[in-house]
Amino acid sequence: MYTFPLESLSMKFKEYIDRTHVFTVSQLAESCGMSDSSAKTTLRRAVAAGQIERARRGAYVSKSGRFAAAEVDSFELVSSIDPKAVISFHSALEAHGVAHNVGSVCQFRSASIKSAFGYSGVSYIPFPFANNLSIQSMCGRGGLRTTVTTREQTIVDCLSHPDRCGGIEEALMSISLFPYIDAEALRKLVSEKSASLAARTGWLLERKANKWRIPSDVLDAFEEMAKGGPFKLDKDSTRSCGWSRRWRLCLPEEEEEVGKWLL
Image (cartoon, rainbow, N blue to C red):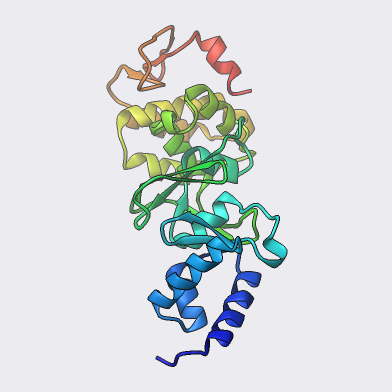
Protein backbone atom coordinates (compact mmCIF):
# COMPACT_ATOMS: atom_id res chain seq x y z
CA MET A 1 0.00 0.00 0.00
CA TYR A 2 1.26 3.48 -0.87
CA THR A 3 2.08 5.50 2.27
CA PHE A 4 1.27 9.20 2.26
CA PRO A 5 3.71 11.60 3.90
CA LEU A 6 2.59 12.62 7.41
CA GLU A 7 1.59 16.10 6.21
CA SER A 8 -0.52 14.60 3.39
CA LEU A 9 -2.18 12.14 5.75
CA SER A 10 -3.03 14.94 8.19
CA MET A 11 -4.49 17.04 5.39
CA LYS A 12 -6.52 14.13 4.01
CA PHE A 13 -7.76 13.28 7.51
CA LYS A 14 -8.80 16.90 8.17
CA GLU A 15 -10.64 17.03 4.85
CA TYR A 16 -12.36 13.75 5.69
CA ILE A 17 -13.65 14.80 9.12
CA ASP A 18 -14.72 18.17 7.70
CA ARG A 19 -17.10 16.45 5.28
CA THR A 20 -18.02 13.25 7.18
CA HIS A 21 -20.02 13.47 10.38
CA VAL A 22 -20.00 9.80 11.45
CA PHE A 23 -17.56 7.12 10.37
CA THR A 24 -15.90 3.88 11.37
CA VAL A 25 -12.20 3.01 11.48
CA SER A 26 -12.45 0.93 8.32
CA GLN A 27 -14.36 3.65 6.46
CA LEU A 28 -11.69 6.20 7.39
CA ALA A 29 -8.83 3.87 6.44
CA GLU A 30 -10.37 3.09 3.05
CA SER A 31 -11.17 6.71 2.23
CA CYS A 32 -7.76 8.08 3.25
CA GLY A 33 -5.63 5.17 2.08
CA MET A 34 -4.41 4.36 5.59
CA SER A 35 -3.70 1.04 7.21
CA ASP A 36 -5.97 0.22 10.14
CA SER A 37 -3.08 0.77 12.57
CA SER A 38 -2.31 4.21 11.10
CA ALA A 39 -6.00 5.11 11.22
CA LYS A 40 -6.23 4.11 14.88
CA THR A 41 -3.16 6.17 15.76
CA THR A 42 -4.57 9.19 13.94
CA LEU A 43 -7.92 8.73 15.69
CA ARG A 44 -6.34 8.59 19.15
CA ARG A 45 -4.55 11.87 18.49
CA ALA A 46 -7.71 13.46 17.06
CA VAL A 47 -9.77 12.45 20.09
CA ALA A 48 -7.15 13.94 22.40
CA ALA A 49 -7.19 17.15 20.34
CA GLY A 50 -10.99 17.38 20.48
CA GLN A 51 -11.38 17.05 16.70
CA ILE A 52 -13.55 13.95 17.02
CA GLU A 53 -15.45 11.99 19.68
CA ARG A 54 -15.68 8.25 20.15
CA ALA A 55 -19.31 7.11 19.92
CA ARG A 56 -18.57 3.42 20.52
CA ARG A 57 -15.78 1.00 19.79
CA GLY A 58 -14.71 1.57 16.20
CA ALA A 59 -17.13 4.46 15.51
CA TYR A 60 -16.44 8.19 15.71
CA VAL A 61 -18.23 11.52 15.36
CA SER A 62 -16.57 14.56 13.82
CA LYS A 63 -16.38 17.78 15.80
CA SER A 64 -14.48 19.59 13.07
CA GLY A 65 -15.54 22.41 10.77
CA ARG A 66 -19.30 22.61 10.27
CA PHE A 67 -19.76 19.72 12.72
CA ALA A 68 -18.06 21.55 15.60
CA ALA A 69 -21.34 22.33 17.40
CA ALA A 70 -23.62 19.89 15.58
CA GLU A 71 -25.40 17.07 17.40
CA VAL A 72 -25.42 13.79 15.53
CA ASP A 73 -28.82 12.37 14.65
CA SER A 74 -29.34 9.00 16.35
CA PHE A 75 -30.65 7.35 13.18
CA GLU A 76 -27.73 8.75 11.20
CA LEU A 77 -25.29 7.33 13.74
CA VAL A 78 -26.79 3.84 13.53
CA SER A 79 -27.00 3.88 9.72
CA SER A 80 -23.42 5.09 9.40
CA ILE A 81 -22.08 2.31 11.63
CA ASP A 82 -24.25 -0.39 10.04
CA PRO A 83 -25.87 0.58 6.72
CA LYS A 84 -28.03 -2.58 6.92
CA ALA A 85 -29.49 -1.76 10.36
CA VAL A 86 -33.27 -1.38 10.56
CA ILE A 87 -34.79 1.25 12.87
CA SER A 88 -37.47 -0.66 14.79
CA PHE A 89 -40.04 -0.70 17.60
CA HIS A 90 -40.66 2.66 19.32
CA SER A 91 -37.89 4.28 17.29
CA ALA A 92 -39.76 3.27 14.12
CA LEU A 93 -42.83 5.08 15.46
CA GLU A 94 -40.61 8.14 15.88
CA ALA A 95 -39.20 7.75 12.37
CA HIS A 96 -42.74 7.66 10.97
CA GLY A 97 -43.63 10.76 12.99
CA VAL A 98 -46.40 9.15 15.05
CA ALA A 99 -44.77 8.45 18.43
CA HIS A 100 -46.96 9.81 21.20
CA ASN A 101 -43.91 10.31 23.41
CA VAL A 102 -40.32 10.76 22.25
CA GLY A 103 -37.52 9.49 24.46
CA SER A 104 -33.74 9.26 24.43
CA VAL A 105 -33.50 5.67 23.21
CA CYS A 106 -32.72 4.45 19.69
CA GLN A 107 -33.81 0.88 18.94
CA PHE A 108 -32.76 -1.02 15.86
CA ARG A 109 -32.19 -4.48 14.44
CA SER A 110 -28.65 -5.27 13.38
CA ALA A 111 -26.60 -8.30 12.42
CA SER A 112 -23.29 -6.59 13.24
CA ILE A 113 -23.97 -4.39 16.29
CA LYS A 114 -24.43 -6.80 19.19
CA SER A 115 -24.19 -4.73 22.36
CA ALA A 116 -25.93 -1.62 23.62
CA PHE A 117 -24.01 1.63 23.93
CA GLY A 118 -24.60 5.22 24.90
CA TYR A 119 -23.52 8.44 23.26
CA SER A 120 -24.47 12.07 23.81
CA GLY A 121 -27.36 11.25 26.13
CA VAL A 122 -28.93 8.60 23.87
CA SER A 123 -29.08 4.89 24.67
CA TYR A 124 -28.64 2.72 21.59
CA ILE A 125 -30.36 -0.67 21.94
CA PRO A 126 -29.72 -3.32 19.26
CA PHE A 127 -31.95 -6.34 18.66
CA PRO A 128 -31.09 -9.36 16.50
CA PHE A 129 -31.65 -8.91 12.80
CA ALA A 130 -34.70 -10.78 11.49
CA ASN A 131 -35.33 -12.11 8.00
CA ASN A 132 -38.46 -11.31 6.01
CA LEU A 133 -38.98 -7.93 7.66
CA SER A 134 -41.13 -5.44 5.79
CA ILE A 135 -38.84 -2.41 5.48
CA GLN A 136 -38.60 0.88 3.65
CA SER A 137 -35.99 3.55 3.05
CA MET A 138 -36.63 7.11 4.14
CA CYS A 139 -34.60 10.28 4.38
CA GLY A 140 -33.31 10.47 7.95
CA ARG A 141 -33.29 13.56 10.09
CA GLY A 142 -29.57 13.99 9.37
CA GLY A 143 -30.08 13.75 5.61
CA LEU A 144 -28.82 10.17 5.36
CA ARG A 145 -31.08 7.45 3.96
CA THR A 146 -32.31 5.30 6.82
CA THR A 147 -33.93 1.86 6.73
CA VAL A 148 -37.06 1.64 8.86
CA THR A 149 -39.79 -0.95 9.37
CA THR A 150 -42.92 -0.15 7.35
CA ARG A 151 -46.12 1.01 9.00
CA GLU A 152 -47.48 -2.52 8.83
CA GLN A 153 -44.33 -4.16 10.23
CA THR A 154 -44.22 -1.53 12.97
CA ILE A 155 -47.80 -2.42 13.96
CA VAL A 156 -46.84 -6.09 14.12
CA ASP A 157 -43.79 -5.24 16.24
CA CYS A 158 -45.79 -3.02 18.60
CA LEU A 159 -48.48 -5.63 19.18
CA SER A 160 -45.91 -8.42 19.52
CA HIS A 161 -43.52 -6.52 21.81
CA PRO A 162 -45.35 -3.65 23.54
CA ASP A 163 -42.58 -3.59 26.15
CA ARG A 164 -40.22 -2.36 23.41
CA CYS A 165 -42.69 0.33 22.36
CA GLY A 166 -43.35 2.16 25.60
CA GLY A 167 -46.09 -0.20 26.80
CA ILE A 168 -49.41 -1.10 25.23
CA GLU A 169 -51.04 2.30 25.85
CA GLU A 170 -48.18 4.23 24.24
CA ALA A 171 -48.03 1.72 21.39
CA LEU A 172 -51.74 2.00 20.60
CA MET A 173 -51.85 5.79 20.94
CA SER A 174 -48.94 6.03 18.49
CA ILE A 175 -50.20 3.44 16.00
CA SER A 176 -53.55 5.23 15.96
CA LEU A 177 -51.86 8.28 14.43
CA PHE A 178 -50.96 6.48 11.20
CA PRO A 179 -53.05 8.24 8.52
CA TYR A 180 -53.56 4.99 6.62
CA ILE A 181 -52.22 1.44 6.34
CA ASP A 182 -52.06 -1.31 3.74
CA ALA A 183 -54.50 -3.83 5.22
CA GLU A 184 -53.55 -6.58 2.79
CA ALA A 185 -49.84 -6.19 3.54
CA LEU A 186 -50.65 -6.34 7.24
CA ARG A 187 -52.75 -9.49 6.74
CA LYS A 188 -49.84 -11.20 4.97
CA LEU A 189 -47.44 -10.31 7.78
CA VAL A 190 -49.80 -11.56 10.49
CA SER A 191 -50.71 -14.75 8.61
CA GLU A 192 -47.20 -16.04 9.32
CA LYS A 193 -47.53 -15.38 13.05
CA SER A 194 -49.69 -16.56 15.96
CA ALA A 195 -53.46 -16.62 16.47
CA SER A 196 -53.05 -14.27 19.43
CA LEU A 197 -51.35 -11.67 17.22
CA ALA A 198 -54.18 -12.08 14.69
CA ALA A 199 -56.71 -11.41 17.46
CA ARG A 200 -54.88 -8.29 18.66
CA THR A 201 -54.48 -6.99 15.13
CA GLY A 202 -58.08 -7.78 14.20
CA TRP A 203 -59.33 -5.91 17.26
CA LEU A 204 -57.18 -2.91 16.29
CA LEU A 205 -58.39 -2.92 12.69
CA GLU A 206 -62.01 -3.16 13.77
CA ARG A 207 -61.58 -0.13 16.02
CA LYS A 208 -59.85 1.82 13.21
CA ALA A 209 -62.01 0.47 10.36
CA ASN A 210 -63.60 3.81 9.45
CA LYS A 211 -60.43 5.90 9.48
CA TRP A 212 -58.31 3.29 7.73
CA ARG A 213 -61.13 2.09 5.45
CA ILE A 214 -60.74 -1.55 6.38
CA PRO A 215 -63.02 -3.81 4.30
CA SER A 216 -65.24 -6.24 6.21
CA ASP A 217 -63.72 -9.21 4.39
CA VAL A 218 -60.30 -8.29 5.81
CA LEU A 219 -61.75 -8.33 9.32
CA ASP A 220 -63.31 -11.70 8.55
CA ALA A 221 -59.92 -13.00 7.44
CA PHE A 222 -58.33 -11.88 10.72
CA GLU A 223 -61.17 -13.48 12.68
CA GLU A 224 -60.51 -16.76 10.85
CA MET A 225 -56.82 -16.54 11.76
CA ALA A 226 -57.67 -15.81 15.40
CA LYS A 227 -59.24 -19.16 16.22
CA GLY A 228 -58.90 -20.32 19.81
CA GLY A 229 -58.21 -18.09 22.76
CA PRO A 230 -58.79 -16.43 25.01
CA PHE A 231 -55.96 -14.06 24.18
CA LYS A 232 -54.50 -10.92 25.75
CA LEU A 233 -54.22 -7.50 24.14
CA ASP A 234 -51.11 -6.96 26.28
CA LYS A 235 -49.44 -10.33 26.56
CA ASP A 236 -47.37 -9.20 29.56
CA SER A 237 -50.28 -7.76 31.55
CA THR A 238 -51.65 -9.52 34.61
CA ARG A 239 -54.82 -7.40 34.51
CA SER A 240 -58.02 -8.43 32.76
CA CYS A 241 -60.54 -5.64 33.20
CA GLY A 242 -62.28 -5.75 29.83
CA TRP A 243 -63.31 -8.26 27.19
CA SER A 244 -63.79 -8.20 23.41
CA ARG A 245 -66.22 -10.97 22.52
CA ARG A 246 -65.49 -11.12 18.78
CA TRP A 247 -61.75 -11.42 19.25
CA ARG A 248 -61.86 -13.37 22.52
CA LEU A 249 -59.44 -10.78 23.82
CA CYS A 250 -58.75 -9.82 27.43
CA LEU A 251 -58.16 -6.09 27.80
CA PRO A 252 -55.99 -4.42 30.47
CA GLU A 253 -58.75 -1.84 31.12
CA GLU A 254 -62.45 -1.53 30.39
CA GLU A 255 -63.08 -1.57 26.64
CA GLU A 256 -64.32 2.02 26.65
CA GLU A 257 -61.12 3.18 28.35
CA VAL A 258 -58.87 1.19 26.00
CA GLY A 259 -60.82 2.62 23.06
CA LYS A 260 -59.74 6.11 24.11
CA TRP A 261 -56.15 5.15 23.36
CA LEU A 262 -57.12 4.87 19.70
CA LEU A 263 -58.77 8.28 19.23
